[in-house]
Image 1 (cartoon, rainbow, N blue to C red):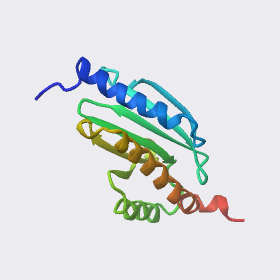
Image 2: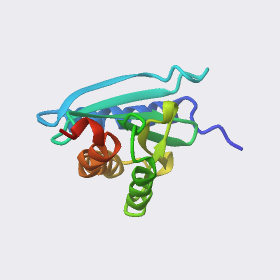
Image 3: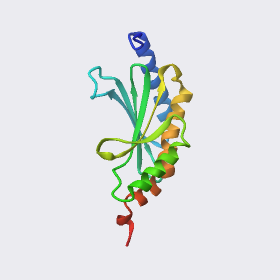
Image 4: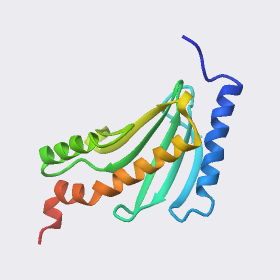
Length: 158
């Protein structure tokens, strides 16, 4: 097994993501914020970025990009754990997963709903980063209102 992220390789990947995010955010009315830091949940402090975009159905969609040993992982928080109609919510998410490329809805901490995916670092490019953010944004926007009304039906009734 080789160590891919040492020295110039890691710098190149960071630079590629930084450059693309700077260009993506410039004069883009959907981008509310972009920031870079490191992941707190690993001893290596993996490079991590977040991109906060303004949505229509969901006020904000924040996508976390984390550069791992061999992949760029991405995730966005969709909504808290469903209070009602859990089986229907899970069925809807599983059916939607079948339509997604490179991403999937999943259950995370506290049973909250997330959209997650990853790409190998060898496939990292401006086009792939654009696809990642576009897929994340579109997937959340297209299902958020329906999920919310189903998962929290009692809050919307009369």
